[in-house]
Amino acid sequence: MSHAHESNTAAIWKVFGILSAVTIVEVFLGIYKPDALFLNHFLGMNLLNWVFYILTIFKAYYIVWSFMHMGGEKSSLRWSVVSPLIFLVLYLLFILLTEGDYIYGVFKDSTIKWNF
Image (cartoon, rainbow, N blue to C red):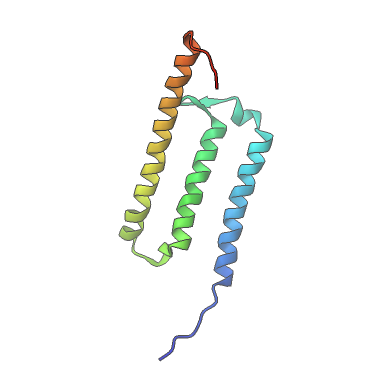
């Protein structure tokens, strides 16, 4: 009762292609910084940063989906694994942006100098 070995080469190349395409888009946007995204702001950040965050969360979700073999699992299991990941990334972003804005305001409006 041996199982036939199935080749996952096509699936591996598909994952490689999707993650490469998203990374290429991130690098392209990081190098060229289009004015439409870089100069417009939304919720205290420029739109380019929001695009980077969305693409990063997409890549993290897709890596979990493909490398942890979540595609064939039940929806409840997928969400129980992916939801904490998404929540923690968004929470970390919120903390970093809130604290960074506070520190920027302290250094901008006070006599303390930027010495680092």
